[in-house]
Length: 336
Image (cartoon, rainbow, N blue to C red; front, side):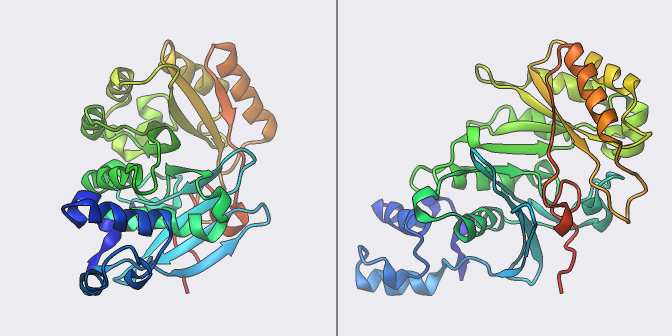
């Protein structure tokens, strides 16, 4: 049986029926064909034998004291996709995964310790957003969320499935997500960034940088040895941006490793003249990691140096740390 969420609307049916089905599943939240009463009864029976429109089940949900929720979503083969829902004052955020595990082995990220188990399909990526949406948002505010592809995995390592998931999420007859509400974060897979720049639909781009020089980044992010920082910056500088749009650079601050004033000045020099902003992420500590979080004063000094050099920088608020849902902490903890 075909998993409905893996398919674009044009692949579901040839005529207006595909629009009816898409709207029923994505916009009316119907979970069985018998409920889609605007379809002929005989067609409903046929479709029920061909298509699975059931969302994957929630294996476990963890609730943080700050309102953040971490989900372990069980896939058809028993594997678990990890998803995080972050309630915010102006718009909520759903952080979704593109892989089970990750192959890039960044030294400060727990997901990298897992290695790569497998890529997620387009439908497994899409379904995470829908599961979190329906478990948290009432019908009246069902569209009040953004999506960030910052969960487990490197999205551009799973390029084709990620791009297909974006087309499905963007479909006007489905979730109708504007690309301005979706952000894709990459550690810097250069050929894929260049390919993404040529796509007809392009999400917001975030670059996981964490290190402003090749020696520092080589140590922390092995991908830099293949795609050095100067080549990455050149590719990002060429990336097509809309008016007033900026690329986000994510920079993890680790005590004695990436938090020195000279690190801040190196970062400012690297980004000089670019349409960019910096999200500073004080390390979310874990006993499996050899690094520690710098003090608030050091974090604030780092931000001030960037701002003094005309680089807009913001400190990302820690969310969900008590349930291992914070940035860099996704490792399928407490799966059983």
